[in-house]
Length: 242
Image (cartoon, rainbow, N blue to C red; front, side, top):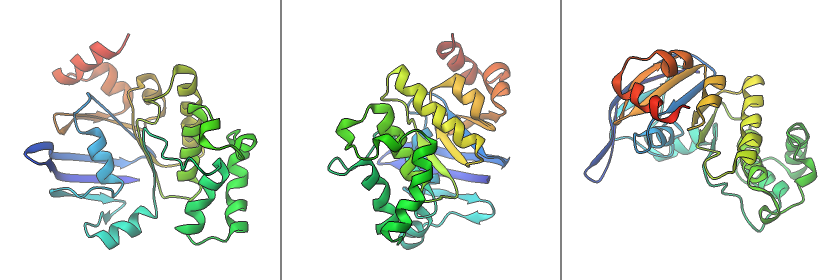
């Protein structure tokens, strides 16, 4: 994916969350957004996923501008997958039915087509034995992996993941990060917001440090984490890294 953002502004009431944000990625498969809480990462991700419309500025993916009208945004959202901190699984449905529902109701597949679509990914990611369970019967890591799989089986152009491990304990976090790492190896394009710096270093083709509503630095992860001379970036990593 090749992403170009120009002059992006987002406000909520009198609060400016994104302040003329600029970013050019070049051709990358994985963009990882890092930075302090409240710096604008999740707001930026929601705009890139077509869930929010900015006050000003433009977003261009692979030469195509992100639309701003709701009918066009609905069509765009059908082409991408989004995963949030909360699993957002339907509690009364089994894991399998949570996977089948968007394929059948949103993308128009028949039930046999939908089941054929999800069978191989369930096996690949070690979830086939849990397909009959409802969310309350799954661990946090299993629920989040089902949520990621639900976004993946619609065969999106790219995935957007917003802190997918923030509510998980270390063991469950490892499960989910392993799955995202496999997606990277399979060639899946994604934009990820995370505080897991070791993982961010491993999976990012490009890392962007978002703070104060702007991209304060971007580049290869080693360059941003180890060698960036921007004071705000240096002080952040001095606090969060061992």
